[in-house]
Length: 203
Image 1 (cartoon, rainbow, N blue to C red):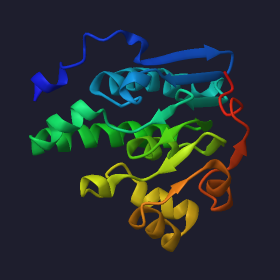
Image 2 (image 1 turned 45 degrees about the vertical axis):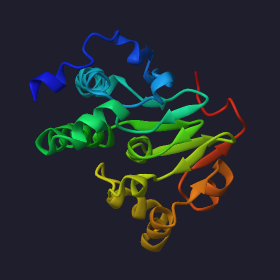
Image 3 (image 1 turned 180 degrees about the vertical axis):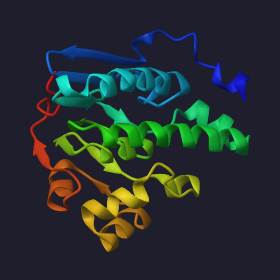
Image 4 (image 1 turned 90 degrees about the vertical axis):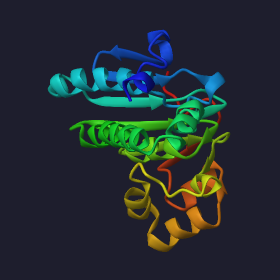
């Protein structure tokens, strides 16, 4: 599977713009042309950033996770998923790696905030769910999306979504393929705050 792992390593480090401003670190997913898909290289950037966040935890107050105005993230990169569907062992490896990143974000001892604008589904929703708070702007379009692939969520959503919106709420959201805007997501308890367009990311 090492061949798969090298697929995107030629890309620039800009797939996630990691910036640090005093006590706040920002991850800005920056592959809008790929729907901010999480490829192996994106996971690598997150992993190396996490090593610093864990090391400097006492000096930090907040991690902001941003997407782009049109898309927060649609989860695992489409090309990567295609490769995964053809190679079960590699698929498991990728999902395990994604989960390790998500668990580490969730475990950070300071506040993490997902700032959701645009489309947020599949692993993108799972990334938002590991953050302590989710702020969504009016343009947010939040859904699960796994059933479109005849798949169940593999990034912890089956555990984290019910914790936010209850068991039956989570079941309804996933099985009825609900698509929620910011206001409705706020009413349901899926997001913690709904704000006007442009105000979710504290850029």
